[in-house]
Amino acid sequence: MPNTAATGGASLTTQLTTVVANTAADAKVRTYEIALSNIKTYATDSAPDPQVPQCLLIDASASNVSRPILPTNVIVRRRDAISRRVVLDPGDSLQISASEASAIYAHVQKIFEEPA
Image (cartoon, rainbow, N blue to C red; front, side, top):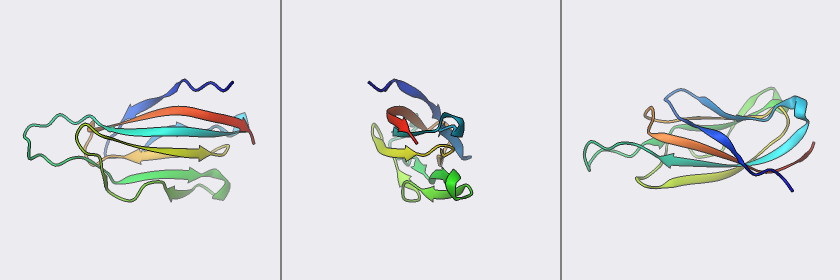
């Protein structure tokens, strides 16, 4: 039975942050569930919701080409989350940024793994 424990997470900043990396040495293909949650503290009711400017899969098998996982500037509404399943081959990683520091939390959970 696969270990589906939470892999971890990160409070996103305005810079691209690597939220999960599938090391090449493990030689495994892994599926992850990424949940992007709005954790912004709102000063007023009219404050805008944060966005995800970039959510990129870095493809090691294609000379680290970045492939978008979500459309640019997806809005994460109050008390809401966006989730996406991502399959990472050995050496691949996932990088995400937010429009505001500490406004979006990326939670990562491994769903499945198998030999490459």
